[in-house]
Length: 389
Image (cartoon, rainbow, N blue to C red; front, side, top):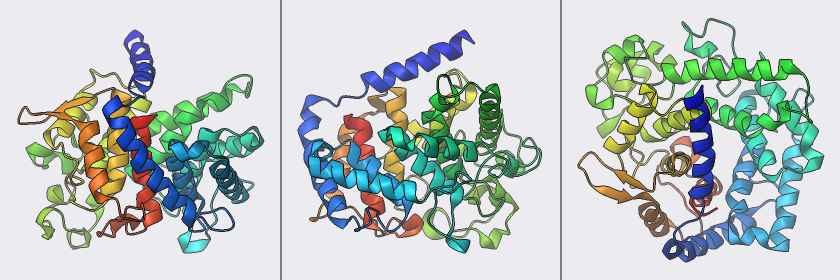
């Protein structure tokens, strides 16, 4: 318990001490941020949204929040309008989502929207945030079943079916992490709220463990046959192990997998997401899951691609990469060859060379919607915000 508490304090200290970038990077970051924020602000829709979607609107607001432009009165007015749009999408059951039917992603949309509302923390949004948190802790989010034997019963998915995945689970855990104060006095005096949160964290940690390629803690069949050089990394969903081999997306080199272990190989954005969840779950830094994940990070260090899937999901990768290493307070990463990397400087350089003339970023690989400049630009500004604030 003492070590866990110390880790919690260390994380808080890291978030403070790692907040300010080095002076030589500050002006470069601010110039990039300003241009990117200008692009997003110019593309905001008349109703305050980006792309008529509360989650994408939330990501844009979070990205803009840590830019120099955020202090301008006209930017504050635009953010207010965007937050009002997000709140207008809130349902009585706590869901925040504007979509319906097949296009509805209640867990994903509610989680990101709640992270955004918590960041700006407007008093008038308090009841909306409480309801959204209650929804993310409800049985509607976690399917029935034994988490030890059915990974889908431990994590969360988009909210349309039983398939859980690490990306949605990570967003839900971040939303719960940043709204923990809502379960405490003076905002709440019902102990059942805290009990529900503990159960959600316990189930999520079980799912996160199921997603890690680590035989010491995960006895899933796919782990036992996975390649040794992938130890410690995280996959998107262990449910993929139950899919037919020919239904899987090709992995490295564009070739279809020859067996399930290849199909479930880890990749960068999910490994950083898993590591971030372990931090939020207050797992000790000496825990084998933490150590092995960080070893994977060092083994596959790069700012040029999303390791394991190349250009796919590259900007989401930068966001999770910067958030996790900022939490760890790790300014230097030593790779598998023993080379030290100033990851902040290297990431800023990679971001700068990819910025378009209009201030946006867009991924030529359209997987996971990164061909949408509003989404990719939001991810990049969030990554820079993790470094700059």
